[in-house]
Image (cartoon, rainbow, N blue to C red; front, side):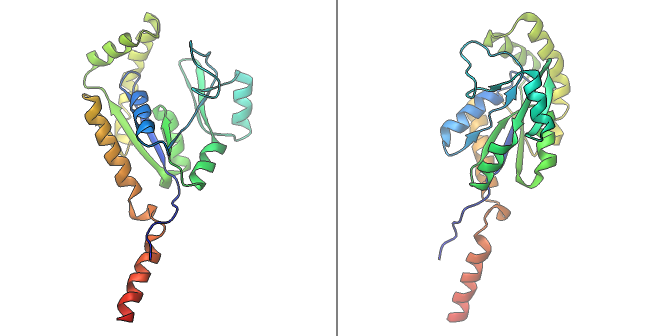
Length: 214
């Protein structure tokens, strides 16, 4: 008699304003559990130095991206800072059927669309910065963006933070290691939820048969 049986993969959404730590936490989570897959988004923005198509993003023209949306090939999509971003549907659904969990590093707009489409399969977590001053410091420390882009990201952060209450869990990333431990705890608990253990009903039936056989 065994309890373990294949379960449907869940979709773990991590959202935050730029600089709050969702990308770093996503990478840490993938290193902790290599069985998980990271949802690679398609985007119309140009690659940054060192980025490769199919690794960080699927880099597509605006025409190619819009064709994917029109054909129903996107699970979610949004326009951010003048560029389109979206999650291709096919690899996500294939992973779910195979029992593989998928991590999404996306904004609140994309998270909302995915929750609407696959509510029962989604676990959403919003990452807050410890302060706005620290958020500004982290953006500047990355040395990836111009002063104009940093100003735009900071201006957008207030709107992004306003959506915190739409998420299942909210973590304040004032200590990266502690936040990561909290993230792992959430994922472990969600995997063990009754509705995500497909073999549980059969296991209990077997227990009852043992009672009857005594």
